[in-house]
Figure (cartoon, one colour):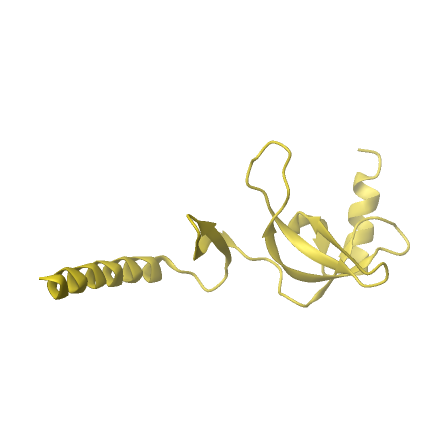
Length: 122
């Protein structure tokens, strides 16, 4: 009897895994979450715009935007307990990690500079 219950549970787990894999998209953000002491891999279905370990620029200066290395996507600390997925970047000059919204990271210095100029007074 226990074998039958075990097999039915395994079959149910496999069916759930098949449903999950059918929805899985290569270019979406996946995160590891902890629920009731167990870790699960979650596919957010949010398109991942940045590539891990690539360099990007912050729109923090017109002449010399800061160069940062994108590490991964993480749930950023939030004051109001909302889930905020941000890009975790490493500023190698300052040797510190920071969180940014992915749309605030640019592939080139010129794009970062243009964004800075367009939004500096806002």
